[in-house]
Image (tube, rainbow, N blue to C red; front, side, top):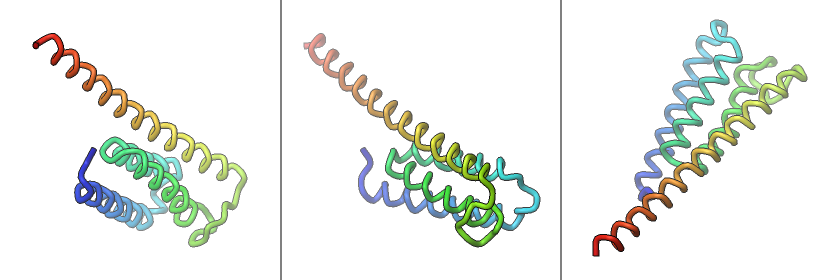
Length: 127
């Protein structure tokens, strides 16, 4: 478990990275397909989840859905999905991000449990 200042730093870094990636992609919006945008946000969610855990991953997943809708789906600059298939794309992104965030959290928990079990075994066999 990270200390609160380290967690705050990671959350701050996630905000900075998300903002920088969003600004860059908005600037080059005509050169990107929606799939590229979604994959970039998915990478951000995955890296944040892997480094900081479930809470940040889930927060970024929901934030990314709003950012994708607002900046990268017509009509731009408002939260409203123009086509029904866009709802499907946003829903698929959200489910993928949430499932992967939970899998990463579960893997971290199981690793901690395995390390604890190994340490306990080592203490009992070495004494």
